[in-house]
Image (cartoon, rainbow, N blue to C red; front, side):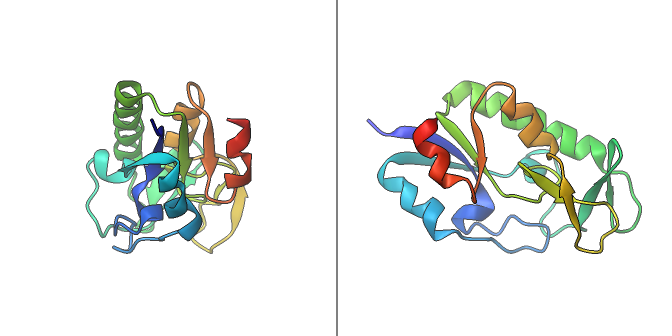
Length: 145
């Protein structure tokens, strides 16, 4: 029986990103030999449309490029993502680095200038409390999970 990986849908090529595109990752797709890959998008689960305005973490809030506070959508998306994880019991969660939802090690700095800083997205932070969480750049660590 295959292990289960809850995966940011954009990494599987699903057009769920803010700009309506995916970020298909061949290494993540190749995991389907060993894992059942379950796609999800916390931002869509939280009620945001695709495409949507770019958003970044500013202090304790998530703000879009027009200055609108969209934190509630990101919090809701993290909570629904946790509910899904609790139902399927993934062996690992693989998230898209840099996202205000899914950033595992880095997020954008809140200036919309393309600069990353150390930090975690809201979904990554919540899921990490109960599950092993990796980004697409950490796949060599799967053997340790």
